[in-house]
Image (cartoon, rainbow, N blue to C red):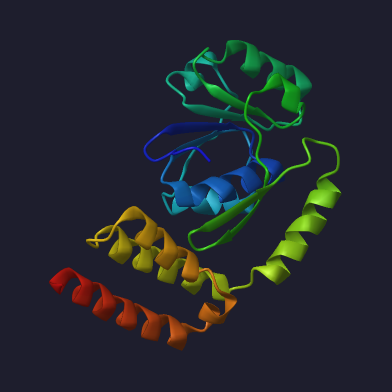
Amino acid sequence: MIDLKGQKVVVIGGGKVAQRRIDTLLDHAAIITVISPTATKTIESLHKQKKIRWHEKVVEECDLDNAFLIIVATNNSAVNHSVIKSAPKSALINAVEDAKQGNVQFPIHLKRGKLSIAISTNGASPAFAKKVKHELENKYDEQYQAYMDFLFDARQLVKNANLDRDEKKKILHSLINEELLDINLQKQTLDSLKLELHKKASE
């Protein structure tokens, strides 16, 4: 849960693990640079689409300058150790080979629009974390994306209403209801809420 918008992210390595990290970061408007002599076809394609930058070379210390986040994801322990040792002290580091060498971890992530759920076992069992994600995917299906948008819109209306804190809280809590997963009911509820708040404002 870090705001990476406009931040420099350097990914050392161009394999499948690096690719998974990049996939996670693409929606966060970070400036992503990959340093690796080779790269997966997906990373090459992202570079051609100008979604990321790929420098086809061995990493040098200067590549790490001003990095906000460094992802160390090569299959060479010596290179990984060297990068971590050379990283700026202010940089966040995700060390794929040995998480303890870094200070940032990438939990398994489930996203439904504005709903984000992170799952981590702190390295105890990635397989179990995947199992939990699968269970949550079934529980929080695609309907929740629209439901989150509905809750957001409703909250903006209530926040700007001329009501005391307890009244606002009561209305917002009433919207936490699985019946409101129905898109048509969401629209009806928003329309009713607008009318109710407008009426209260006129009193």
